[in-house]
Length: 210
Image (cartoon, rainbow, N blue to C red; front, side, top):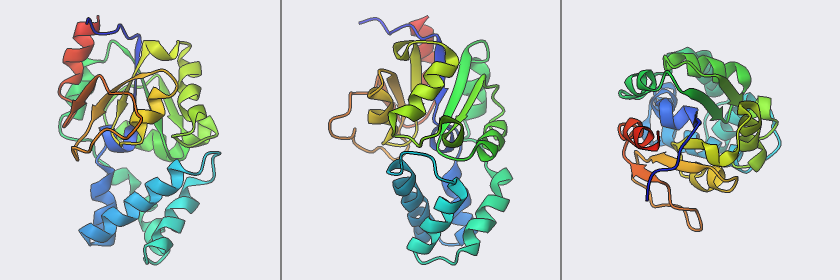
C-alpha cells in the first residue's frame, strides 16, 4: 500500500528528539536510580490527565523513588543541558520545508527550551501546560491537531515512548515509533507505520508519502 500523505509532523520531544534520560541519570549520579526516577515521572504524568504543574510532578517522582526533593530542583536548573539524539538535528534539517510541531509532557517554559536544543524550527510547541492535559489524554494530542488546523489523519506523530503509540493512535494519527529500547507494541495499540530504533527512516517514509 502507498504511504499516507501527511501535511504536518508532530514529535514527542523528550524521548523521540531529546535524550532526556541521560540528564536525569547524571543529576542522580546513578544509572539505575536515574532511570527509575525518569520512569516514575512518566508513569505519573501519563496517568494524571488534566495538567498539574510539571515541576511538582518531577519532585513527587523523586520522593517516590527515595531521592531528596532538591534533586528535582537540580534537574530543572540543568534543563538547558538537554541534547538531541545524534541523528535528530540532521533529520530535522531534512524536514525544514514541512510543518513541524512538538507535543510534550512538561511546562511551556521547559518545552520551548528543550525544543530549541534540537536545532529544529517548530510551528507549534504544544506542552501539557498549553494543552491543559498530559499525554495520553486525547486532549493533549488534539490541542496540537487544532493548532495546526488539520485533521488527525493528515499528521504523522513521531513517538519516542511506548505510551504515545496508542495515545496518538486513539485520536486518528498514524505513528512512526523511534523505539530505541526495542519494546513491543503495547497491547491494543494500532501498529505503527514504522517501528525503528531511531529517527533515520523518517525522511524516507515522508518522501514516500509526498
